[in-house]
Image 1 (cartoon, rainbow, N blue to C red):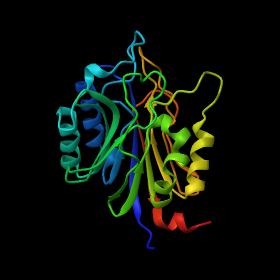
Image 2: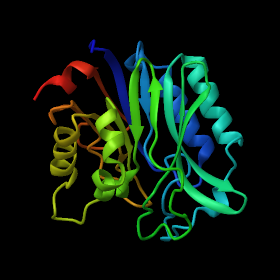
Image 3: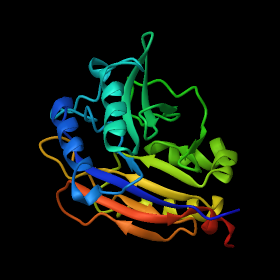
Length: 254
C-alpha cells in the first residue's frame, strides 16, 4: 500500500445563528486566504451555516431546512469548484418532510460524492430523525474517507467499525461543548478511536461565540496513531487547523 500525503484543514468558526449569508461570507473569505493556499480537503463544523441553538435556547432548526439540491448545497459545491478543494459542509436536510442533521462532501470539481445523515442526534436535536443511510466509505483524492457527526462518536465503533477499519480518514464535524469543569472528552475519545481503527481524524468544532451557545473550540487533526498533530489555539476564532497527513503509511504502523 503506497502512502498518500493529504493536506487537510479543519475550519473552526463561531456560530452565527440564522445568518447563513454571514456564515458563507466568512467561509468564502477563509477559503480564498493565504492560510488555505494549496489545501486539498476542508471540513466545516457541524451545522455551522445555521447555528445550533438560538440565543433564547431554541434548538429547532426545521425553519432552516433545505433539500439536497437547495441553495446551501449549491453554494458549497460552487465553493469547492471555485477554490479547487474537496469540501465537506453541513445541511439541515428536508427529505419530504423528514429532517436530518446531514453532511455533504464535494470533490474539487464541485460534484457531491458523499451524503451522510447523523445517526445519533443529540438530546436537544428533537427536530432531527436518526440517519438512515449508514456510514459511507468514500473514494476522495486518492484516499478512503468516512464520516461521523458529534454525538455519533459514542456509538461509532459498534455502528461503523468496518467502515472505520477500511477508511484512511474520518471527517468528524462537531458542535462539541463539555460541561464546565469536566475538561475535553475528545482528548481521550479521539486518540483511542484513531488507534483502535488505525484511522486519521479531522475534527472541526465551533469556536467561542456570543450571544448564543458558546463553542468550546479545540478543533484538531490526529494521525492514525492517535497523535494530535494540529490543534486550534484557545480564544475566539476563526481558526485554521491544518496538517499534512501521511495516511496509508500511518495505517500500517502497529
